[in-house]
Amino acid sequence: MRALPVLRTLVAAAVVPLALTSAPGAHAASPVLVACGESALVDAVNTANAAGGGSLILAPLCTYTLTSAHSPGGAGQAPGLPNITTSIAMAGLGTQIVRAPGAPAFRIFEVDGPSHVPGANGQLSLTSVSVGGGDAGLGVGGGIANLGGNVALTGSTVRDNKASYGGGTYTDGALTLTGSTVTANTAGVNGGGIFTNGGTVTLIGGLVVGNSPSNCGALPPVAAAC
Image (cartoon, rainbow, N blue to C red; front, side, top):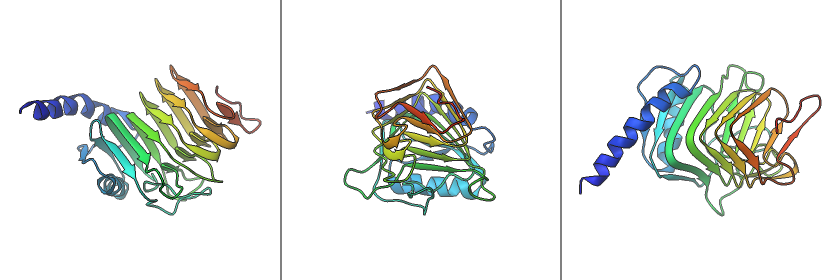
């Protein structure tokens, strides 16, 4: 009967340091524990944005299933979660954030920088989180659309997403993948895994494999990172 409380204690001990150190510029406020559920995650992102940033500890082994878009969005499609406009870190443990099967088309994340949204300073850090099932339709970035912001993935996975460009991830900001995997994503035009429209892409010990029609795509003169 004591196994579950002990597991929660161990998870918190392992994950809290990650959340505190993962987000560049994140506020030093105490990390917030997010219950396993769509509304809890949406509310936590809205609260962090309103506070100017924050660190979120996601429920371990939880699948956050998104049933609808929760923000107007840009670049051709709305995101399932509120737009990231401040510095937000999310740390999980075997945690997934996915679009519900049969739900209307929407991407999972949109990270907005000042070049797209005046006053925005979107910075998203994901640690041990899987992002899947996003569908941006004719838009860009089915899993993550980085629109002039900063995105860092550590030990995370982006899979089974689709869009016209950047089925997994579209970026014209800064994108860093450390020990992360981008796989099984699909683009209608180019960059099934990652599409680089501008900015920088850094891969450190990660894999971008098994995406269609290509793992990576880019617009000249930007060179594809993989």
